Length: 151
Figure 1 (spheres, rainbow, N blue to C red):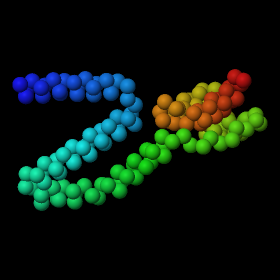
Figure 2 (figure 1 turned 90 degrees about the vertical axis):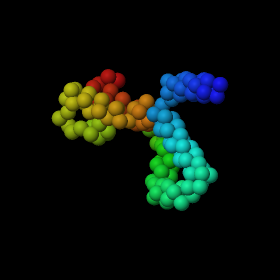
Figure 3 (figure 1 turned 45 degrees about the vertical axis):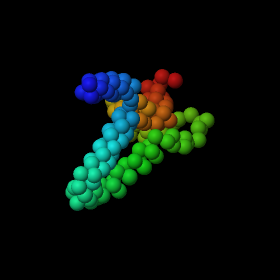
Figure 4 (figure 1 turned 180 degrees about the vertical axis):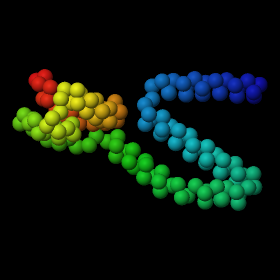
């Protein structure tokens, strides 16, 4: 009977995990993996302390301590990244050719193909779906449209 309950519990957990991965984004998956790792370490430390292996548990904690500052730095960077940065003030002045070229990182001799390839490469980096900025994506769109005379 206990094994049947264990199998049912594992099946439900696997289904819940499957549903989570269907809806979760990369940042949520990373956070879940980090949480699961920390919980597993806490359980392992508790088990080692209860079973009389306290010196090994202390050694495990000592081995983990150097990684804690880097982990905290990554967590604070992730938190700062998820917060929406302050948007620069919207300007009512139209974009100039120099501004558009500077935004796309091009020179004066840029042709249509060069503009499109620079736009695509930059958009892959700053697109909101890739945890980029909507404002930067709008500026790239505006620069491309200006250079290709789509306005």
